[in-house]
Image (cartoon, rainbow, N blue to C red; front, side, top):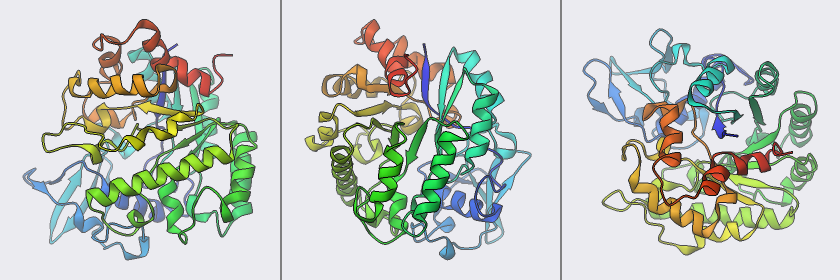
Length: 377
């Protein structure tokens, strides 16, 4: 069974989709676009441009975002903003997404063509917070799709019971299958370690649901308010790993996984080679409940070409340090289409990495995800 552990389905990004309003959602998209590494361009002549005018502070304070008429170009499937009379865009969303949406029907057609049997729908703070919609996606394709639950991390401290109720409804009523957590967004609220303290009631309720938790680790409390240097970001990322280790110790019966793999772009040297310069980055995987996503094309596809030979040594290290039975393939579909086809995002592992045994490939391309999602039963 081939399982993509990282795919999205989302409604047009200028609709509310579970947020308080469409305007609120677009503000979060504006923040996401500002911080994303994909290059911005000036529409008139396609020349490179800075995305900084979208969010000069680099933080998540939505009230401080500048008014640049950030909007959606529905016909061409892209975002636009205007500075000094000039229009700009950024193709974080891949070209071809009319209305900037990706329906479950589109997802399953892509899966059919690429030979993918099952996919796990991820959530993101810019792509929607509507668990009922995600439940409908799964119900339309119950043999093909599974879905995570979106959690508003920034609301937990002030609205603990409400967030817990939403989470339980998503799992028990809408039939979702996993929990997605972006720890960086805990720090929109006062700085509190997210593994315990005032967050304990939330975690006690969440872990009692007996579903896996997928973490997208950020770079610590400071990253939510300002742009960090590379060294500050590395230390912040390791800080988040240490918090995760404490979380796993507190909840030893729960399985978790780190999405996207490591924070790869922090560890690029001057020749754009990956150099993991701190051995402690592997410490979370001393716990057998911790897993890691194999997801290189979407993260580094602007630097490396198919079949991504530059990352093969890193995949070998992941095999040695973590084991194929704790690695799971994910694509970030449809976003990985910026750099390669859906089939190629599978082929680089299946056809080109000769150091992988058939059993390694079976684990990475489906076996590990099947275990985490209880599909192997």
